Every structure is written in structure tokens, then in C-alpha cells.
Image 1 (cartoon, one colour):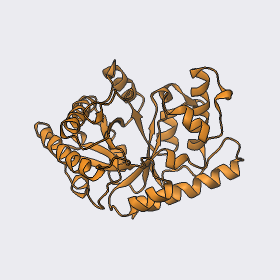
Image 2 (image 1 turned 135 degrees about the vertical axis):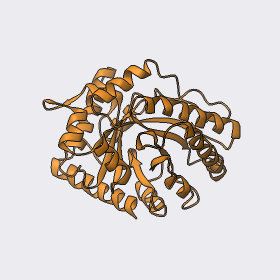
Image 3 (image 1 turned 45 degrees about the vertical axis):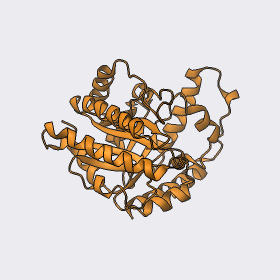
Amino acid sequence: MPNPEQQERFEHGRGFIAALDQSGGSTPKALGLYGVGPSAYSTDEEMFDLINAARTRVVTSPVFTSERILAAILFEGTLSRRIGNRDFVDYLWNEKGIVPILKIDKGLADQADGVQLMRDIPNLEDLLSRARSQGVFGTKERSVIHEANPEGIRRVVAQQFDLGRRVLAADLVPILEPEVTITAPDKAESEKILKEEILRGLEGLGDLDDSAEHRVAIKISIPSVDGFYSDLIEHPRVARVVALSGGYSRAEANERLSRNPGLIASFSRALLDGLSRQQSDEEFNSTLDATIESIYRASIT
């Protein structure tokens, strides 16, 4: 079963989740926003070293603490990284008290039926076993919904729950992430169909026992209708419902999030916006502190 202390913190703690899981596709843009242009690296290895240095600077900051941050989502490559003489995951939990979560998806397939499913994840069980052995609590897996296509959304949710069951079998807690793009012209309708499919998927977990280790978490876009996901937040099979910023500015994402009691942030770009490699430690920590405080306040409203 999952670590009970981590489970309690993840399900009932006050705060939000820091998404620090930039992968191959998102890293160049993240580095650019951090003030590191493509001329600073010539190989993928150099690129990942640079984003890991940025990630480490965030995690080791004195303002990045468990008082406001419940968990952090990490990229797979982070499992082999160290902070000082400690594994990154070990440092995150045992030094900072922040629950480690691992992004396990390998990106998105081409769009079909208005959605993008996840690509296949080779050697998944080996990855889950490795994550578990290193102290990871749960996983995150993302697919994307672009339009209110019932068949496409059904396939997204079915794939999410199929993968979620495999994660549960490895004694980890899955965060299912069927993102609805915020620019979709029929976003509210997509969310309506999505919620119906998620509720159906949750009922499909009825063959599992009711213990804590058989609950899933859900990561969604901030809904068009305030309070729309309240029934998911209260569902006995749901450990937590969290929201991505999805392209909204941090200010707008926080404002929208604050109108949804029980929904907490799991922001990436909106968390790192305003940070740069060129900042002094004092400037960096001050900017990060203000950002963390604003997201924390929106998450506990």
C-alpha cells in the first residue's frame, strides 16, 4: 500500500502540487522562459542538465517548503538525479516533507476524434517498480481533449482508467489527467461529457476494495462552470482533485481556481513564470515566494 504518511498529507493537507515535470517536448520552452536560450546547449543531455539545475534551484529554495506545497510532480529522468549526496526523491520527501509524484506518460498520440490519447508506455511495470522502490508516492499521466466528441472523450477516460489500474496494482496512486484545452470553443460541453465518463469509470472500480490504496486522483482543467467538479471532489473513490493552469495567466488561473472550493492547483508554467537564471538568489527566492503564496491562497479558498 502507499506510504500512509504521504497518503494522509496528499489527501488532507492544505496547499498545492508543484508540477516540475518538464520533459523533452516542453523543456526548450521552459528553459527559454527561464532565460536559457537554445545556444546554451547542443545535446539533449545538456538540455536536461540545465532544466534539472533550474528544478533543483526551485526545490532547494528556502521558500519551497511543505507549509504550502503538498507534493511535486517530477520527470522520469529526475529519478537518477541527486541533490548533494541524496537522491532527488529522497531529498524531496525526507528533507522537505513534500510528496514525490512521477510523470509516467510518454507524450501524446496524433489527434483523432477530437482528442489525443497517450502514447504506449514501454516497460511500464519496471518503471513503476523503480519509482516505488525509490519512495515515489504516485504517478501522473496526461491526455488531451480538444472538442466535445463523445467517442473521443470515452476513449480518453477508458485509457486513463486502464492505466490507473496498473498503477494501483503497483501500490502507487495514479493522478489521471484528461486535460480539456482552454481554447476549445465547446469547453463546457467537453467537461460535461468528461465528468460523466469519469463518474462511470469510478463506478467501474467497484470490484476493488474500499481501502485508501484503491483511490485515484484526478487532474483537470479549471472548469468553465464554478464548482462543476464538486461531486468528484467528494467522491469516495477520489483521493484528490487538482487543476492545471492550462495556459491561463497565473493571476487568472488563481482567480478561477479560488471560485472552486476543494479544488487545488497543480501548476507548472504558472508556478515558474517570472523566475530566471540571471536572478540573484535573493531575487529568485522573493519572486518564488510571492508566486507560491498566491497559488497557495487560491488553493485553500
